[in-house]
Structure formats: structure tokens, C-alpha cells
Image 1 (tube, one colour):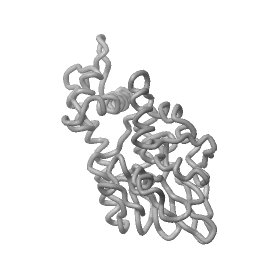
Image 2 (image 1 turned 90 degrees about the vertical axis):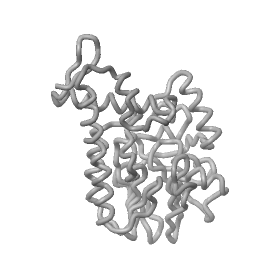
Image 3 (image 1 turned 90 degrees about the horizontal axis):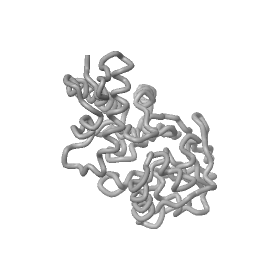
Amino acid sequence: MLVGEANGGYPSGNSVIVSGSGETVIIDPSVTVVAKGGAGVAVDAVLNSHGHEDHLAGNGLFADAKVHIHEADLLAAQSLDGLIEVYGFVGNEAAEARSNFTDEFHFTDRPDATGFRDGDIFDLGGATVEAVHLPGHTRGHSGFRISGGVFFLSDIDLTGFGPYYGDVWSDLDDFEESLRQVRGEDADFYVTFHQKGIIEGRPRFLEMIDKYLEVIPRRHSEMLEFLSEPRSLEDLTAHRFMYRAHIPATFADRPEQRCAELHVQRMLARGEAEATDDGRYVSL
């Protein structure tokens, strides 16, 4: 594991090198890898776990390497326009994101990138990496089952912040199902892209993922309580159920609104809340 700045805290992350007798791959080359000018070894292929800027940062650095990403997120690796589409940015927000992704994350179009599917195996010669589709964070978000007892969790990062599903391509139901699925992964070591890094042993992993899972129903309950009187999506966004109050609104408002939308959709489907005549929502 190539540890990123601040233990892989955003905007950096923890990249992983897997070498066999035939090929070497790097999983999610971070901005720290770019800053250091490479991975310290020759890289034959790049595996992107999903289409977010911090995971694609080093794609341009390895110009002669093949790039692979789940087919559902393929457009994000192929072009900047595709990455903007994954987020759902429009207008001034899109313009600012383009500048940020290019200047801070060194984004480089890789039109040669190809899409993998769930269960595809990369045979490196004596070592294998198997793609495991775990959607919800993005449509194509994937983990990697690495021979030798290692599972790369990517942005199922097991932090106290909890699951992030704040983009247009995020899905709450898919994320929960992915968490239930990955909970069954039996590995000796689990690796997150952000902060936690290497987690040794299944008992510790189970403890951490169960706490991580609990964040979703806690957010849901807090929103239901907040809707004890009629509130709008704007009210829910401003109240902050994901981000703390000190995080700038320019960064937090869009994902907060998407998070609120997904939970309100769940409330309506479950009969836990209803829409009022003036377009607000109230819990039942």
C-alpha cells in the first residue's frame, strides 16, 4: 500500500500495488503518487475502483499502462465531460469542478480506458485481482479481491463519517446492499482508500463495518424527527445530516440535498412521510 498524505485523507488516498510474475497493477493512483512521480515500480495497468477524481488522479501519469474501470463508470475515466456527468455538476459548479479536477487532481482523459464487469479476473502471473461490483457510492463502484487474502474496499472507507451517497449517480438502496454483500467477504486484510488503510482480521472488520452500516438508519431517523413539522428539501439540506456545520455550503449543499432526496424517497415509499400541498414533507 502506498500511503497517501494524512493517512489517505481526501484529497489523497491509499493506492495499492499488486505484482505477479507477468504484470504489475496499481489500484487507484492518488495525488500523492503523482506528487512523487510514480509508484516506485513499472506499472502495466491501472485499475480504477470507480469514477471519482481522487481515484483517477494518476491515470495520466501511467500513459503507457492500460486503464480499467467498471463499465458503469467508464465515461468518467475516458473524459472530463464524463466525470462531470457522474457528479451531476451543471453551470458554474461544473466550470469550477473542471478547473479543480484538472489543476488539483491532474485529471487526464483516457479514451483508451476499458470497462470490466463484476467477477472479471486480472491474472498477473501467480497473483490475481478479481473485480467485485459494489454500487451505491457510484453506479460502478467496485472493490477488488486480491489473492493472498486481501480485499480492497475502496470508498467503503469505514470512517465515522459513514457512507457517502451524495451524487446524482449515488443510490441509497444499492449502497446498503453493497455493504451487506461486502460484510460477507472473508479476508485476512481489508484495505480502504481513505484514512483507515489496512485493517487486519475479520473480527475487527466486522466491528467496523457494523458501525459504518448504522450511520444510514441513524441519518434516516434524524431526518424523520426533523420532519415532525413540515419542512422542504432546502430545510433538510441546510440542517446538515452528513456534514458538520463548519463545512462550507459551496462544498456541502449539493451532496446534502442528494442525501436528503434519497432518504425522503425512502420515507415516502415506506409510508413514513407524506408530501404537503406546498411541496414540503412531514413525517407520519
